[in-house]
Image (cartoon, rainbow, N blue to C red; front, side, top):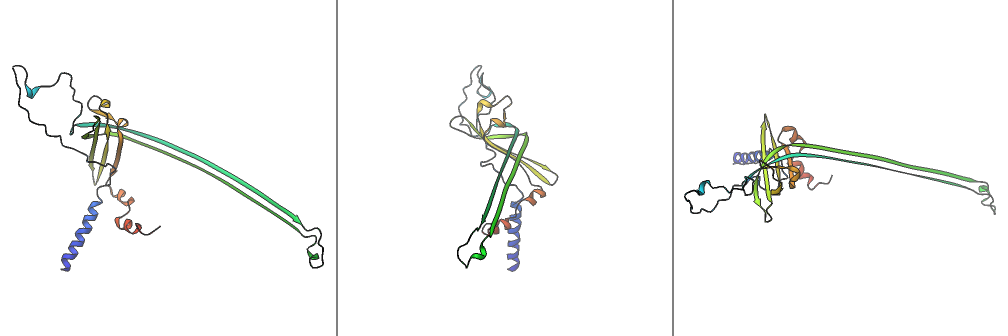
Length: 222
């Protein structure tokens, strides 16, 4: 019985450790979708018209249905800077003396002087600069066609290199008018874009807090 209990605990620990191999994501929807099944129609073939090979004369191959594939050209470059400074100073001085005292008990304080001086100065400066550059491409799938015709897209790319795996994920909303030749859309044209690059390398795990530490810090104040 104890052996079975120990085996169950070990399996739970291994399961928890396995959950940490895939990095978390900011994409809030499925990363792929299957094309919807089309209703079957009776073939209306004629002497020239063939339903199986028919293509509208002015129709292109632009993605427009659930399951269609788009290529997002990622070209994100952000730069921000902030600089602030503040200073203040304060000086005070007190000078007083007792010139004359009437009455015998306090004559010892006659001619006593008091001089006090205080100075306070504050000076602070801060500067913050941030710059990010992310380029590449990822193919995404149309997961939903919205009521206004826009396309909700999402996709994921995994590249395994040696002992780590790179994850590139993207989701957002695409206006069909911004789709270029070859079904390519710039990431700058994607609304509500969520773009991320994560890895499952060991040095990335070292920067992440363990689940046991998160459990204790959830109710123990710092």
